[in-house]
Image 1 (cartoon, rainbow, N blue to C red):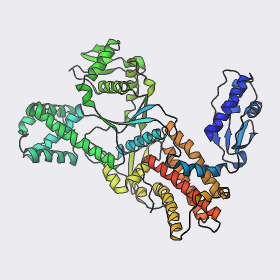
Image 2: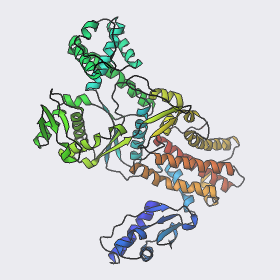
Image 3: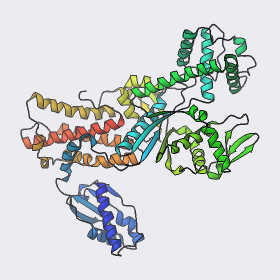
Length: 583
């Protein structure tokens, strides 16, 4: 409805410009909002206040001209000017009731639109290094990214979901070496495990698989493993220590055996991550390998292209991208003095590849700790003449886990963290998915485990699901009492009490609020409307009987209840949350 009113105002402005009552360049933003006070109409616009100065007219005079030029609409009862120049729109009686029929007719498609038709969007999210299982921090990015992709599809976009697998680089070498050192422990060697190694139980599990299936084939003497290795922290340098151990692992194992350990660790953890995400209701169209970029020469091509365009210079044996020329705070290394390319060089190649695949828009969902990467990636795209403005980077803050009022400590490297799987098994997929998107992604989030476990109205996901289940219960009651449900005979005009009017208004607003959630990349807006719907429904349910003697009223109330159930189900599906029929 908001869009229809905006369209009417737009037509009125076009008429006024054609009549030369407004300047040809007059083009203010048309804002329409639902009225909080019924006496001020159903919707209001401040267009006359916002446009008064560029139009060169007093607001009320401009409002009067707009009102006179408005096209007729059968659903409008009247339009009034209020206060300094607000325009209030009153809908015809019965229009709100008609939303019930629209919801029931459109079913699972109600609220969806074609706003993004013809646009192909990629959403890349989670993309955590496969150096361990996903933890609760990753869960927020997973729930946000998956819901955003669903919202964009509901808005008509063609969406590709992608996970970028960082299967190359130093962190993966640290993981492979960590697995090998644990394997040596199991093979009988006395190993002083490095402080910078991955220490979780999952490392032992992968090492045990290697030892169980290959015995001592990968064994080396501890003295050779630590030969020539810098001292570890705290006396020494932990970074040099682990790098020396990686070098010795490569030398002692040889490239083929080292690659086998590397791939065993990588493939095991990628499969763990894939299964955890699937059980969390998150699937991908593409798992894109970072290693593929190197193997196909795309990283070298990215650097060469930057060189050809004059954006790379050499200093102290390394190649630097002059990113400060494009707004970055400092220049960035793309190839080190030892000839190795950097993570940033891979990022450049990856984003070139994204746009080469033909996406109209690329959305990256990153952890908030990656904020500093935004300027450099956009700088590289600008330097390469790619549409940097078509890259949207959305940041998700970390989620802190609370239990019994205290924060649960987490450290990925030490292995002390709550995995996404453990969270799902504890509170359930539905509560986890719902809780993760209740707030703006850029806001810090405290995940209350105790609240998520509750089966009460205090738990927001339970409260919304219970509204859906309650409608199903009413339908079962009708069947048990042999009461025919004849929605075609519903006298919707009888839905006139304040509870019903509140529900009708929320149902009518759902498509616009769903569209806003997609456009603004804010899934919490969908959560908000579902919570409002549930609250309005429970208030109505507690105040009025549905199964009444008056058939017309009974069928009308059942129709409204079924429409509410449909919208709640539609919204929960987009959130990746089940809509139970019994609770």
